[in-house]
Amino acid sequence: MSVNESAVTDTSLSDAEQWADHPLAHFLAAAWRNTVRSFSRQRAHYETLAEVDGVFRELVEHAAESPERLAGSMLIRTHGSFLAASSLALSGQIAESYALMRNALRSALHGVFIAGDAERQRIWVARADDEQAAERMRAAFATGPMLRHLRELDAATSAIYERLQQRTIERGAHPNAYGALAHNGDAQPTDFSRAYLVTDDEVQRMALRTIAQVGICALSMFYYVFGDLYREQKLDARLAKLRHGH
Image (cartoon, rainbow, N blue to C red; front, top):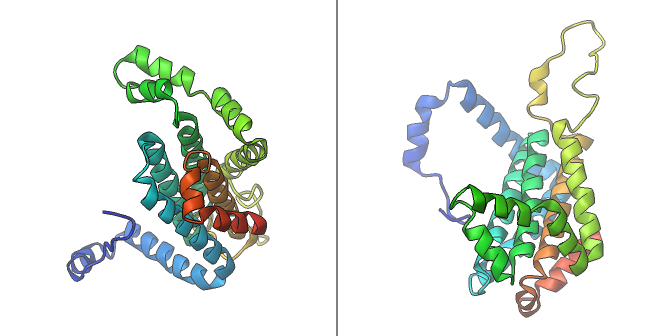
């Protein structure tokens, strides 16, 4: 199934009715209600995410024509993680969304590092052959060499990458360092269930801003792989506009 296909049919909705009373179904329904509410309550953030998504989709479409097939697969993984992070944050699953943001950044870093280098591509493709091949991959694709490569291409984007990476680590543990420990003021036990879905506050807004910044950073990185496509499809101008706003 592609990102453009609908997964909902009358048959699937009918089949789902038997699960309606399960706790998981209630949670998923609450998450979807939050998502729909966030479309309007966080409209500006949603519209930015939609524009970043639009650039990703056009790039993915045209990257299929590029000889950089492995980098293209990393582009798809980056976009997929961006979409998943957006879905989680809009639904209120804030801490969980940061793990997907980190995945997006890491996939983009891999894509830039592997592009145009036949030896790195060979190491990556052979990584599951045996333990020695896996060890070669771990050494070649360690964070240090990949970051140095990005820094040589674009020092400013590399610095942004590192700041965002650190933010996803810090906020992924708990996006509100005090929220889980705060006393509710009436000597009653804290309702930890409220921490699963967090909406309509600065914690959610920060996550949505960060997802947009992660997407923009990743797209800035892939410019060094698919630069001709950016220019031919005017994606460089759209990216510059997104950068200016964030």
